[in-house]
Image (tube, protein in one colour):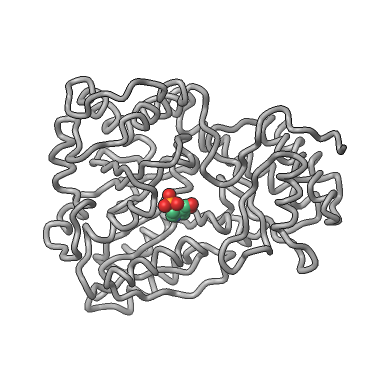
Length: 389
Ligand code: PLP
């Protein structure tokens, strides 16, 4: 026997779904109520108001009983028409999936190639839009935090680039792995649709997703002609005015959402964001201390919610993850798409603290050693120093 045993808690350190706090689990442990009754209306009204805070908006937020992919589709089909041109950037696996969806829906996609180690370059956005005096491009689609690479695009600077080109394109942003973890400002950055999901920074189980909607996006939805029915904002917003949905909402997840939003408000969003940045910095200190490479190349784009670690060709990152799961009962994120087997990803977002990170990094270090990857054990010490500051 190895003596590593199976007692204690599993470490769920993939970059989402994340650990659900006990407070949220308790809040969801309720009888499901009549979703057309007065008790539900009060819950609906409360969460629809409170959910605006992490988006940084005073506009409506549409909540779907769907995973994030559904909210991606909702953002496109509510605002665009068949044959519309959209501008996308290849920042990684999720940007690639989203532009693929746009193509399947009948949009004309311009997909700017990328190296999966950088975010969306604001200069490139300005250049492309400046070269479109006829305003053929109807939307710019950006993934705020590329969960496949641990790279965060600079959404505020991209807004400035769109403005500098004096271009009226809609601005659609995926915050599925950043909302509630990395500073975000839907209103200030004049984003038209912000897409988010429940299972990452919001500390909930998978199952609901969001569209925060600007006035300009609502205006666009009145003439947009992509077919839509389930995703249509209009009947949802009409029902939401009284705290209801036109169909059956995810009642118990909404109880959880109410509790999670209370937790975020108690800690304070600026402190939540600062905590994520500290944990990300400590993780990078460990990676460098081990003598390994952080996938993200531009320090302005380091992700606060996850870190992808690049291994040299002689090691298989999936084998390292297998060893860590088997011996230390910890789940880490796999390399996706073209990064398969080359990287593994540590999620450090959501319901998470210093000692959980210390345990996570200790487990990664032990797993690397056990897998035969040469690492300097000073890595964990470097991380603890950042945490101790
Ligand atoms: N976009 C990003 C950035 C993601 O990280 C994910 C999932 O991890 C998705 C989209 C897809 O969301 P879902 O799996 O909830 O449909």
